[in-house]
Image (cartoon, rainbow over all chains, first blue to last red; front, top):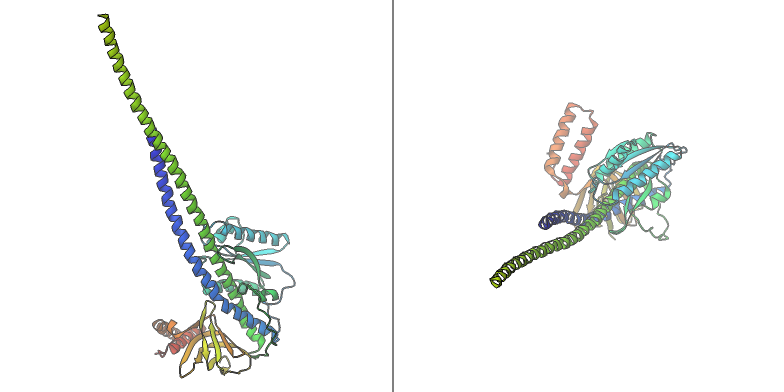
Length: 318
Length: 132
């Protein structure tokens, strides 16, 4: 029945409208969090830069690169991946792109005849690899939308312990690098052992620092350069993880904002077309009703006319 | 010429400005930096870093381990755990100190409690509340 169709459409429009309210709210929340995450990324730069400078100074000061953090192992039997995804969904392809890249990296390592290790960050990463029956060595979650330095330190400790114990021979990170609100990219970066080019170009430094041409100053060290380096390198690893966490968080918010904006736009479009259909249905119903009334009236008049006509006929006959 | 000083934690720059002298504690003792100091790179123990400003003013920072780098009259204090006096919760530090003391009394070999006590005492010292 025509009136019934209109009622069904009206209910659907109301439901889409309330979904739209939710996606719109999520879009706005994500947008405000992008700002905060961008600030956090920027605020982490000075430490990251300073610690990079110190490592460079130490290298210039002749710290013997004997630290296990710096020397690549001759035989790499097991490569571990720290995979940074989000705790929540509703952020477009954010999680799936990182996880797909990570799974590809694991398969690559296995194809090379090596073993793999997995350290997951974010509920989605843990769920993905558990469901596919990968072996997870450590899982962290609950902070991906707003990571703190302590979170980086906890992950750093879990990874460094296994590396120093010889369980892992190499550790890499896979995360989404935040370039701008519009551009994010999944990257795979070595973490330990630190490579020279890695030390020089981290996330903190998009541009290489121009060489001032000034001779490197000769430093006084206390204690010895080697001892400082041993204290410094674990912190350097933490700082790199922290930068990766912040980049991932900013990317997650940006991806969520985009996904929710698309959802809001779609809801709007759906409401528009449903409203159009509903109006047509209502118009049809009204038209039909008028037609019925007109038809009814017409029929009535015809009937009356016919009756009168018969009357006439009768009169004439008389 | 004054020193350009920056106290940097991983999460942000805690303090930056000009100073006349910076006093730090390294594991082998206190060290002071004045303008013109030779390039220096050192590890810091648990202790306060004192930044002496122009006039008689002084900025103290509680540093629970870190590094100090000095070159070209720039002093950079790097610490993954540093606090300015206004960031310190005196009440919490005091309870932490008491708890650590009672744990130490029960077991003098408890290194964790000893470290906790050292941290709490440093916080109280920097916050200017005394260790009670």
